[in-house]
Image (cartoon, rainbow, N blue to C red; front, top):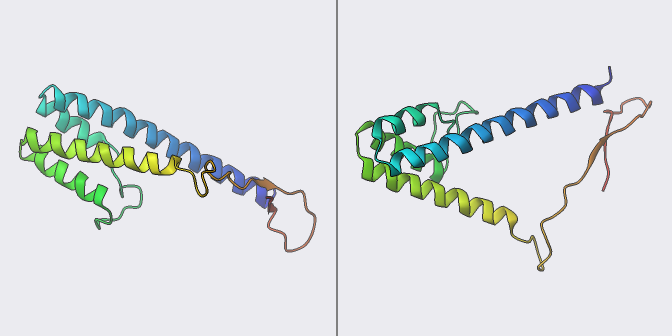
Length: 137
């Protein structure tokens, strides 16, 4: 087995894991919003506990971003039974996510569309010192 095969399998697994966490977050976050809107605090608390949160994957206990701070505030409001505060935090997080997604879709420069990714393809090189991966542009 070549290094390229190992590397690409690791990338595929990571991408699948990230996609799975993203889908889990999307579904859970949507359910959380529905529970908050319905005024169902106990259901919202249960959904929040299972929801993957920013920073969790890294294992970091440090709050590094505004969205992480908003999640912390949401947690506090849910724990304290503050439905109004939790609903406000939810809306702030939702807006932050929408802003981040809109920013990603913005043209990079000069009104052109988003930059195309640089394809990474395994090479079939037999040379010494080759990593087995080549980048083509």
